[in-house]
Length: 161
Image 1 (cartoon, rainbow, N blue to C red):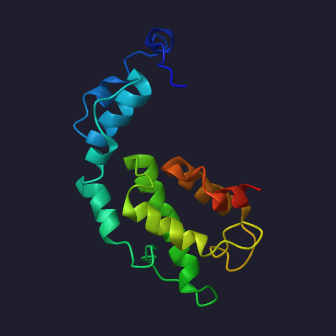
Image 2: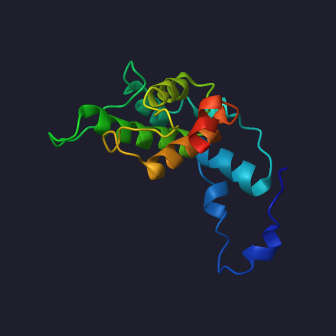
């Protein structure tokens, strides 16, 4: 169910219209989410946002295994994978939340495959805290993949359960 926001109800509480900068933005991603979430419909396709310079810069840095390399130094007590999982979580956050990437884009499907290889037998994603249970990152990662279209995947159900 999709509903539009009654602009007259809440906008009167402001000294200026906060949607004006959004509606006037030249950024296609901002235009898409403004039209979709505030106006209730848009003629912009998500696939038109994906080739933009910013998300493509993120996609180009993705590793063959679906992860992104952590750019900074890492402690010798943690493995490279721990840091790369964290960086991968950050990068898919940008792609899904800011640019509307879904499982139809290979960057998201590769990242999903990367994280699923770190799914423990009880369902959580292990690795950001070495092999420790991580309900916070597991929940955040799974939320992103649900938003990206993996809501019917049995491995998502396993993580949720």
